[in-house]
Amino acid sequence: MLHVVHHPGYVVETERTGTFPHDKYALVMRALGQSGVAMTVHAPEVMPREWLEAVHDPAYVDEVIGCSVPAAKQRRIGFAIDERISRRSQLSPGGTWLAAKLALQHGYAANSAGGSHHAMADSGAGYCVFNDLALAANRLIEEDDVSRILILDLDVHQGDGTAALTAGRSDIFTLSIHAEKNFPTRKARSSLDVGLPDGTGDPGYLAALAGSLPMVLDHFVPELILLQAGVDAHTDDKLGRLSLTDEGLADRDRFVATEAKRRGIPLASTLGGGYGADREAVALRHARTILALSATIGARDAA
Image (cartoon, rainbow, N blue to C red; front, side):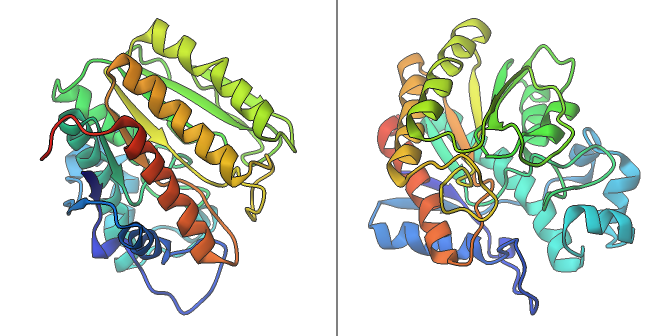
């Protein structure tokens, strides 16, 4: 049984077309449904303000909730923050937290949104408003669900916001494998960064993953993995540079899931980046990642 967290509020219809695909969350759910996989859909709630303020500047939280984000910050984010985007930005962290809770119960669960790894304490950036990864990790540890979390970021872009928001914490380890010359220009310092050259294909990428993830799992010994499973490392992605094929992405996902399963570590995934004019193709890549993770890890029970 695949456990997926989704909310209709994730999907925001816009009159303007742009790089960020506001409708891809619905397309991902459609692709999952068409796969025929047995699936239970769980609806998240908005993340409480006090949970948001535990990681983000309260003044910034007020700006987002009140739809009063200054124009300069909206440009940095990449789209305007209206009531619909504000609500999605509060639902998405709640979804990642819920997916993590479900993963602890079932072994694996997916949030059909999230992965907003560029959001900083006092501003969003790069199509990210609130950093659901840092928010969920912080809350899970605060509630004593787990004591150590690995945030594994496989988006083509470095998880600079996540790294900055969790810097200095001994209970959260951030591993980012990304294109070194891609956005952001100024990288933050993750617990471990693996920057890859443009054009890195399947063999080089998988070698980098195999050379870093098992080592981190064995030394840090996390009790949960939060995976930023961006598919923008794909060769056809509008913003990617690493030239992974469909099979390369599938091998990536199966490797991560196998390493987690071998050690009995629950895993929750978030969507992350994926861009291009063919939005159904992008959504299908996301869906295939979720399906590969689920099939490899399996379920702890039949619930």
